[in-house]
Length: 360
Image: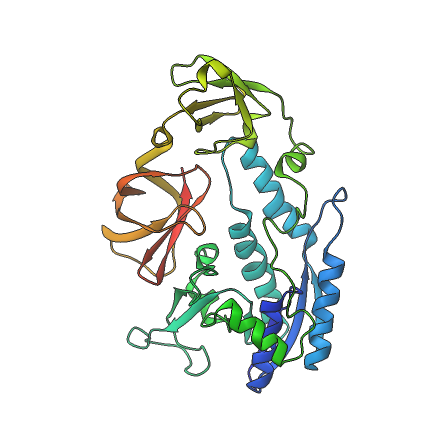
C-alpha cells in the first residue's frame, strides 16, 4: 500500500487532502510541522496543531508531529532579515517550501518510510510519459513529472514551488490541485471536518497580526531617513530604508509643496545611506530587462526561449525572452515591468512552470 505523509497545517486544504487519500485507500499519516515563532508574538501554532489533531481524529488516521523550529529560524527567518537589511525584498514562503517542507520534511518522511509527502498547495503534477525513460511506473512514479498551475486561478500556488527539483516532484502529491477553494470547503463539510469554514491564513505565517516594521525593528536598526527625488534632493522622510521596496507608494512623507503631481512611488532603496528615492512616475521603478541569480530549472531548458514571467504572486504574467548572458540568465520584458530585487521571478509556458530565480 502506498504510504503518504500528509503535512497537516490545521487548515482546511490539508485536511481535505488527507481525507481524499483515506477515501482512495492509501496509507496516510497526518504530520504537523512545527516552525519557529518569535516570543513577542502571540502563538498561533498550538491552535493550528489542535485543528490538525482534530482532523486526523475525525478521519481516523495516525498523527505525528515534527519540530523544525531551529531549521526554520536559521534557514528562513535569519536569511529574510539579512536580506531586508541589505535593502532587498525576499520571499520567505518560497524559502520555507524549499528548506522546510520539501527539504527537512521530505528527508524526514522518506527516512521514516513514506513513499510520498503531500501538501495542500493549489498546484498540479502531470506525468510526462512521452519523456519518461526510467523509474517505476504507478502512482506518481514516472521519471519526469511537470509542475502545473492549480486549476483555481485565484488560488494557484505554483509560484511558491518553482524551486522544487525533479526528484521532489517524483515523491510529492498535490491532491487538491484540480479543485477550486469552494469545492474544497464543500468536501470538508462532506467529510465532517471541524475546520471546514476556517479562514485562510494571510501574509507571512510566523508574523500573525504583527507588522513587518515591528518585526524587523526587533532584529535590525530602523532609523528615520531622507526621501529623495530623482535629482537627489531631499523632499521628505521615511521610517527606515529597509522597510521599502520598488513601486511602494505609502509609508513615507513628502513635503506638501511637492504633492501636486499626485502619488510618489519608491524607485530605489539605499540601506547604507538610509535613503529612498521616489518619483511621480511609477514607471521610473520599472525595468525593461534584468538579471536573475540562483536560477533553478525544474527540467533542463534550451536557451534562448520565450516564456511568461511573474515577478510577484498573483500578478498577471507578462511575455519575456530568456537568454544566457555569459553564464548568467538575462530576462527581457516586452514592456517595462515593475520588479523588486530579492523577489522571485517565476517563468511559465502556459500552465507549465519552468522554474525561476532571484531578481538581482
